[in-house]
Amino acid sequence: MTSQVPDLWPPTGQEVVFLLLGVVALGSALLVVTTRQLVHAALWLVVCFGALAGGYLVLTAEFVAWVQVLIYVGAIVVLLLFGIMLTRAPIGRSADLDSGNRAAAVLVAVATAAVLVTVVVQGFATAYTPLEPGGGAAGALGSSIFRSWVLPFEALSVLLLAALIGAIVLSRTDIGGPSRVTDSPGSDPSPDGTGSDPEGGSGSEPRSDQETGSDGVSRNGG
Amino acid sequence: MHVVYPVVVSALLFSIGVYGVLARRNAILVLMSVELMLNAVNLNLVVFDIWLRDRLHGGQVLTLFIIVIAAAEVGLGLAIVLSVFRNRRTIDIDRLRDLTERDLIGPGPDAPVGSDPGPDGPLGSGPDTPVGSGPGPAGAPPGDSPDPGPADPPAPGSEGGAVLDRSEAG
Image 1 (cartoon, rainbow over the protein chains, first blue to last red):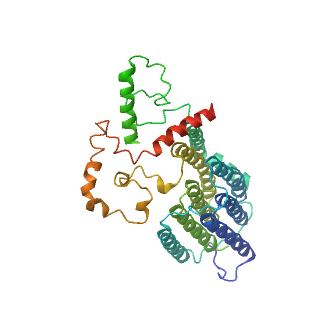
Image 2: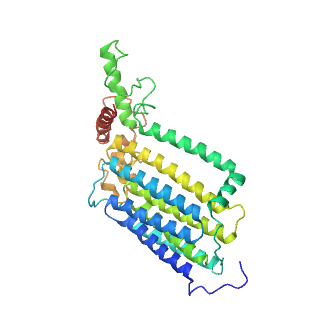
Image 3: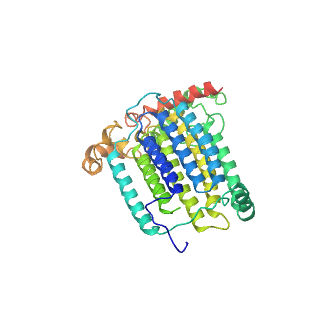
């Protein structure tokens, strides 16, 4: 942007700090996707997000950095750890965390990295901006949100409400539809399936026949 | 600050996320890799916002919005993963293959992982045709239970799991 652009290689102090944080972030991200222990992956994710927050601080985006610490490190990683615990994941080393198509994944990832890095280096080789503090402070960002971006902000609050309700409906078993949604409408959509059928007390023999029929259909479908 | 450094870090982080999404089997690890990709995009947005000196701070505001959307996405994704775990007793993505047609061919879900089942479809059409025509009449004979028999083992697990979880929740 400026007229005279300093050279790329002897990096300034800010760039050295950012590059060190970037190396930490990349290394911990690599450990997230390659570690053999599920809980360690979540903890390396904390390191990666923390390093990225430090990078935001170097880039003078202070408010984004603290929001990153609060939401990503504080909420999302804790949520992922709860997911790990609730799915009864093995605590120690588990050998089957990697899929069978690992070679293809390496190929695709290396190709993606090559294409992106080539394009980006050629496109932004001379892009330079001096860092000036204060641009990403909470005051400036807050006034920008509530002046120019109010409508997306409100839409996002509605989205959060919808996600909250959706998560509750998905994770609770006693509300919402029955667990087998493939039942034909003729069969009784009682949430227990075959057991505890209090309202259909008439005609035990054809009732059981219908139950087995609907059960076979649902198993075939689901 | 040269723009190249953060943008290259972002590109590499995105590639690591792509590798994680493609190579991991556990659904929660896939969600973590998706988070890595979202963070790469966030870093890009912040850097370009600072480079272009946006008066409306569009990049950083959009970064905040993406963080919020990522929180919602993780919440819903974990709810879906827990629902899958409750019904199937596993969150192994390689074994959640109900939407494929290979389950009708072979009962073993682990066998076709290494071998390519692509040419297996037209070649093995001899034993396929009665099984493949099974979903056509949609299980009209109820005594056709040997056909969905190989697909059965998730189903009792799902019943037991649902009952067990309901007893836990109640």
